[in-house]
Length: 214
Image (cartoon, rainbow, N blue to C red; front, side):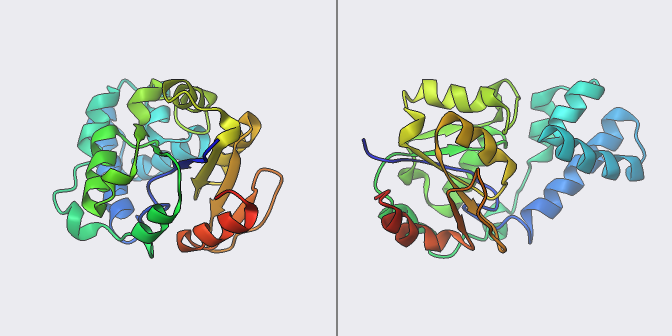
């Protein structure tokens, strides 16, 4: 069967560190101050703690505070200058063109933001599907729910899939389900859950050919 490529979004298809993540962090902390009664210092600490412990800041807020998921996602993913803030990964279009097979975006971000980023990067046409945080009942990667939903929704055998991620922990579930895994990291290292460790996305087509994935 042809390979199905499952891509993360932020820091996988584009570099979110220079502009997107700093602004998103600011919006999340401000939201927490306005809607939970936390101080700015407390919000900054808990925003990071919840992300580390639960996979997303939203998951921690849903567990410990009375927030509405859609309300939070809307107000923390407003980027009026998104087009100017996007930094596509090197050779992004060439990489996607060279990877034969279906491509699905799988992100812990909200759907509207994910679609806006794909549009801004001009790569929407490469993708056959999208799984965002709303589609997983707000259970983020690496929770099994999202992976199972993706496989069922698109009628995919996990053994046909290659998951490409910058967050190593999210590859653990993919590997347990039988997917092949690619970890993008400036200092990559192989491990039991990583089939292919790469410095950058542009290396993927050649590496995939060497592995017989293309």
